[in-house]
Image (cartoon, rainbow, N blue to C red; front, side):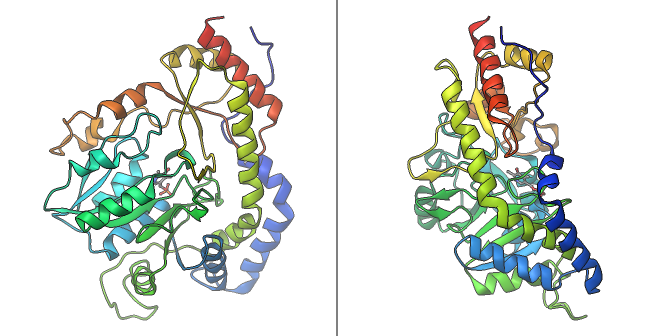
Length: 372
Ligand SMILES: *Cc1c(COP(=O)(O)O)cnc(C)c1O
């Protein structure tokens, strides 16, 4: 039995804030003094810095990650009557966004070792109505984008990458979010790059699509009182943009810490604990460190006793949720997705987590799995 140690939280932004507080408060002060609060110079500054971070292109700041996905699908022409392929082991907003366009989500099963979209399975679900595919780079891992691109080209589909969990992840040296037509990011506080509130962003290399997304986020206008197309209100504000610009400068250091923590878990967890596999060429950003175990209940019981935080991402696959029971495909089993939902467990993983806490968590998992 491991010795009792201090409680380990799943997430706490205040530890990080204490380290960057002076920079953040100065950025906030500058915005308040500037006289501009919405879609001003700080939004443009952050968009340029983030596009640069991804290797060059166009970034369009929006209100949150859900809107980013919905706006991306919308400017690609996805709407009522269309089908959009995605996975059921994702955050609900992936599907909320598809529904916001009026399109119908169609769920594909996952590869049981990576828990990511299985392109061979997707192939079997294409119909005349399939218009787009939304691969989800779950946990900070990366979907095999070469396979997705070939599949999309064969079937004339648009690609919108859900990068809400993969900010900072690369595949063959290329950032996730830069493979498809549009890459969508969330800056929800718990994400790798988190705002102090809600924020999101769409990335594209296509100037036309970027221009259309800028119209859609602002009632369909170019900043005038004359709508060029139908739009919504989904703006990034100056305060969050200024905060994100400060935090972006630290992002690579924070991701390096996440990688150290993941490596420590890899070392500390016994061979009986199943990890989620990463494809060769992926530089994982470890938004979440996830294991799979038939003994999840036992591990959780120990965590509760020891004051260790954890998460389950996600306990109910979307096609099994009440809200989506009306979908024609809701009853279609996705065996690998459903098995994963019963076994996944996210361990605490954030940059400020001390390595001795990581070793303690790994010991507790090992003990629980061995029944000690
Ligand atoms: C967080 C998240 C989103 C949505 O982002 P919000 O900013 O909360 O709207 C979408 N997809 C995935 C996979 C997420 O984890």
